[in-house]
Each structure stands twice: as structure tokens, then as C-alpha cells.
Length: 479
Image (tube, rainbow, N blue to C red; front, side, top):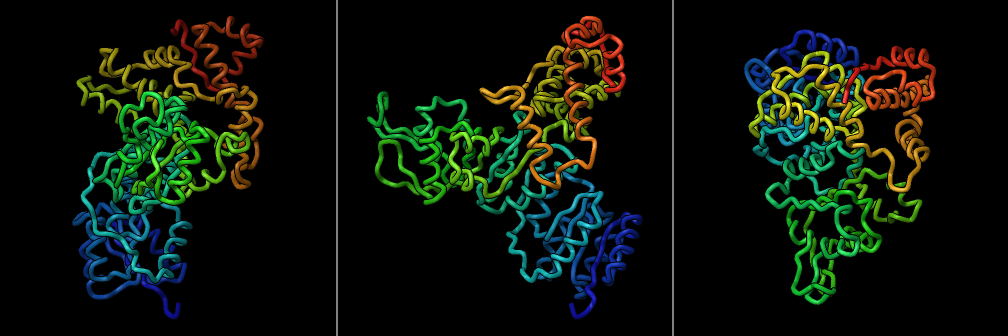
């Protein structure tokens, strides 16, 4: 640029102001720092600055409320919002009000500098719609880095009708994401219709999706309304899309290509005014190679991919999730509970094969079955042992354990060059396999190490050493 750009920063945290002032000055920007919204607003009104960086929570005004006011008088000015209140709602509100970008705290300086550079080079006015009233209930819980990425992606998708493909293991919350896209999107006033491909007889899938005419098949005594018609002007969530029969896939492809469909037994095309959100826990690339899924349909569905991390990859969200599920139990008449620190430690070490769904079920049991206001580690250990096989969904149908492990390794470590760990992969994989294997065996033998060693084919001393190395909690008499 022909002159130095001036960046206006508003944040009531002196340490953050210091860090930003040094970093931005080092990059060659002129910087003006404010500790409140009032000062920032006066600068904007006076025509100062080329870009704004603002915190959300400030002593005199919420930074999110300031964004549309700045946009009204300075529509070309880009605004970057930062907040320690790192939730989906914050990200969506920042996007709705016209922020150029939302960054959670603590922020990455390299990423911030990249966003600033893009914003200063962007000559568009942003094209954001007017702010909408949003429900303060959070559909998704967690402040981990993995969830922050999800929030930012979803916030950008709310004002669009783009087709979204949600992937992730069973129990990670794929339908919650689909509902969030609908409830916070521009189709929120329309219906949300969900259909699970795995739960419908294969010969009825087409009729369920597209409807049918009278006499189209045996038992069709009248016209049937399908999910596409029910979801008009709204969102259609196609859960477990990997289980859709090939014939139905062909019909769905036509809808995505042409925007219209015909009922089973019908001839008149019907316009489909529907946003499609699909989800699967299956590896669709593998399904395509096996001839079970159409490649052209995959590319039509995978316009915007959203991958949900398993709970074991965001265990820092566990305390907040547990508190949320206990609070939800209170709404249904259950007494509020809390966990003692040792009990939370057990949850942090649990493999969570059933993901968030498994955790929710556990918390509901703890609230319903135990009188103690504070749940002990012993209670949690017993419940985890009793439900050791709950929610397991590691191998797909017809898949051997070796094939399932290969698929998991491919997805976790070899899907891209930059995902490869620098070193120690062999030890890491062995530890991740050994911990649940030994834990489950000890749970099955109620903590009897002699019996567990026999089942595992290990020397007793070797088993003791493994228990210590892997920091496995042994509870005798569990189950």
C-alpha cells in the first residue's frame, strides 16, 4: 500500500494491548490502542483508521453491538472480533453483525497477521445481512481449538445455502451441527426435516425421500408426501448418507444437479427449494472404491466438508460438557450433581469410543441413580466398567479388526503429508492400543490382575509395569 495502514485496537486487557501494539508495529502498521468501546467509536466517527480489532467484553459496551454501528457509517472498514467467550453463538453473532473475521482467545499472532493482510487487501463491503435475533442457547459445547475451527466454519455457512457434508465418528454430534446450520441460518423459519438412511428399509427409501403417487407400488393406496416436500423452504438432513441405496443416490444426484425431482410413480417435475445437509460416519472414499457410493454424488454433497473431532481429541472440553449435561438433567427434574476431581480424572483418561453420546448417557445415569451431590471416583469407575462396551462402533460392517485399524490410521495420520507426527508414531499407536485393551480386560476381570494377565497372555510383572507406564486406574471388584 502507498501509506502505512492504521489499525484501531480496543481491548480492556492491558497485556493483550501490549502484545498487539508490539506485533503490529513490528509489521509496519500505525497502531492506536483503546481500553474501551467509547474511545474506539470516537476514532471511527472522526474517520480515523483502516481496520478495527475489537474485543467483545469491554467495560462500557459489548464489542459485538459496536460492529453494525461501525459498518453503518464506515461500510468499507473491516472489523476483526476477538473473544475469550469462544462459543458457536459468539462466532455466529460476529458474522451476522458484519465482522470480517472472528478469532478466539488466546489467538495465534501469525494467523492474526494473515487475517489483517487479507482484510486490508479486500475491497468488498462484506455483503453481510442485517443482524438477527439469536437464541442464547448453545447447540454445541466446547472451547477447544478443534471446536473453535468448527464454529468459525459454521458461522461462515449460516448465510448461505451451500450443501454441507458432515463427517465424524458415531456420537460426535453430527445432527447437532446440522440443526445449528438450520436454526442460525437464513432458512430458520422453514422446517428442519431429518431422515436416517440406515433406519429405513432399502426398498422404501425413494418413497420416503421423494414421496409417491397412488398405486406406485403395492400398498400405495394414496399419495404420500416425501421428505423433500416436507422440507420445502427449509433444511433436509440426510443422516448416514453412506447407507443410501444406489437407486436413491441416482435420484438424489438429479435433485442436486437440476434442483427438481419427481415422486415415485409421478411424471411432473417438482421444484426443490431445500438446503441439503448430509452426514456419515463411514469412509465414503472407501465406499466409492467398493462400488457402494456414487463418486459424482460425493462431489455434489461434499461442497463444504465439516469434520467433527472425536471426544478423545478434545478432552479439554469434558468439564464443560459434563456441567452442561448435569444442568440439562435439572431441567428434566433430576437433582444437580458435580464430580470430585479424581472422578473427572477418570473421565479424562477414558477412551470414549461412543464420543459425546456416551458421555451424555453416563452423566444422565450418574444424576438419576446416585443420591450423592458429589459423584465419587469409585462410582464413576464402576459405571465406566459396566458400560465398557457401550457405544463401540470401531469397525464397519464386514470389516476385520485389521482393516478397521488400517482405516483409522489412514484417517488419523496419513490423510495428508502435514498430518504426519514428527517422530514416535510406533510408540504412540502401541500406547493407544494397549491402554484400552488392558483397561477393558481389567474391567472384565473386576481388577483381578492375575486373571487379566492370563487372558492377555502377559507375565504378571509385565502387566504391572504396563499399568504403571500407561497410568491405568485399577478398581478392584468393579462391575
